[in-house]
Length: 165
View (cartoon, helix red, strand yellow):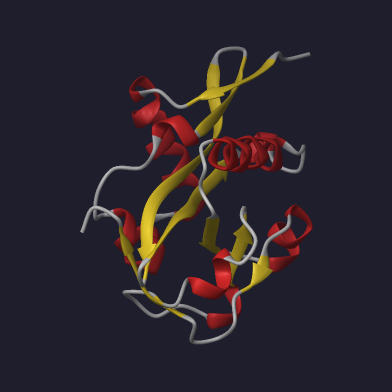
């Protein structure tokens, strides 16, 4: 039986997180719209979490500050779990931790490009089409959002870009 530990991401986790993301998403990840936004600057380590099994990082989730039009928001992702640990609820657990940390620190909205069957049960809903524009082509049906403060989604209209730009 392995011991699972969940904790905020540290700089020492960067290399293994990159390995996990490469394993999960392959080289095509660099062309995705969300990745292009993340290139704009750093993510929020205090809102990003890892899962460890017997001390080894096996999953991670990151949140990055973005602007959607004039609105401050967070972009979720990547969320990745090593194949041997998938379908055990680990990804959902660290995602919930990340969202709760965002809520506790006063953030109002989390967006992502992902699968509604996975993220919907966690409270994410499809964003009205053409409300948000990403810097690369994206399936409009896969843009999802979770309001941490009521009314935040309705105000988030326009280009999605890294908050550092």
